[in-house]
Image 1 (cartoon, rainbow, N blue to C red):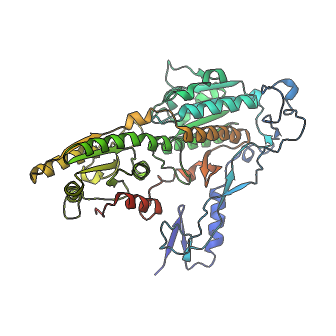
Image 2 (image 1 turned 90 degrees about the vertical axis):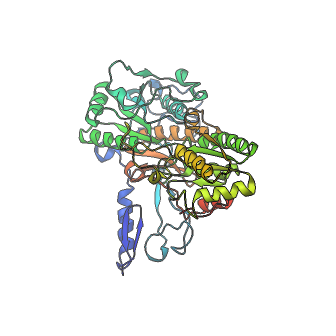
Image 3 (image 1 turned 135 degrees about the vertical axis):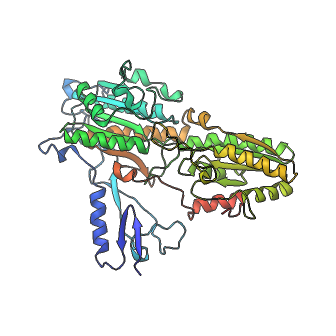
Length: 486
């Protein structure tokens, strides 16, 4: 019998003696990050205009076309060959908790990705750059923080033409939606407000129409803030620009409050969502604890992945039952949630449940409706569980008071907390550094606490999920004390 070990989309049959060499070659090909010099082979880089050692104001003038002058050499640049290790745990067995194995016996294979940061040589003259920023998808804490840092960093390079495209990709095509001129003065305080200065939307015109609009506007750098679907669009825009031999850098900044983008420690907005969820959980706890046989029910974001529900439950210490999309569960039966809930009310007199929005969809049935993003509309698992709890306890003649809280839109509209503010600042700055370095079709993220550039196709292959065998999920179960509901 053959054993196949799958990692990052590649199968490695254990009976192939050359599997490791093949894997390393495949990995190098997949994680190559596209560069303008791949198409424009005669491009000659120029000295960077980004230098924090300069004792002059950061505004480009003819005097500094050869780079900023300083009294001594600045060693703040990142070498193009600097790499960051993608995986840092060396698993000794496939049965180890959370093991991600490559090849038989969890053979160790070093996997390196490109370190993010400013380069000593750049591929764009800042005076000729026309930069555009677009925010797509839904709202997420930190959008304004990223916009602000992109604009500030572009100005330090010496870019004078910066615009925001209103309301996502639609802004490239819709009439009556003019560009928003951006500068440090415009964005100075936008991080103090939630939402997006530019507005957001899902869907939009075709890739060809977007690139036509970019050509018409003379855009040479495009910064795209969004999730998996938006990044897929950004990658198509990058490919279309290459096909037309346009000298354009397309750089993504991963925005998903669900934290479901591959290979990254976390995405911006996630920490804020977990922190704000504590308010809803604490309110549900107080309501449940203050009532006779009280049940607090909180529904949090998490279409495909239960990271917010898991982390919020672990952080609060007030959750008795945590339900996520990755772990199927039953409501009824000897091992169902309702039987355990009855036990909790009999012994503790109250209980608090945290459920991710994408959990238990098999219990509701498909709505057969689609959102503008192309995703199927989810059934409301929170309302369903609330109704089933009321029905169950009424049938067994046990009083139960259920308080249901859905803080979704309150959380999405929040300002970023301090942790996300720092993450947004560094992501925004590194997005600009990546564009000036000549990279395109990339996204910027944090990997093992270091900031990296990754090829877009590798981070959008599929959504990142909570591993039910991971240590973090085990920690959550230890905290809640819940049994197996499947």
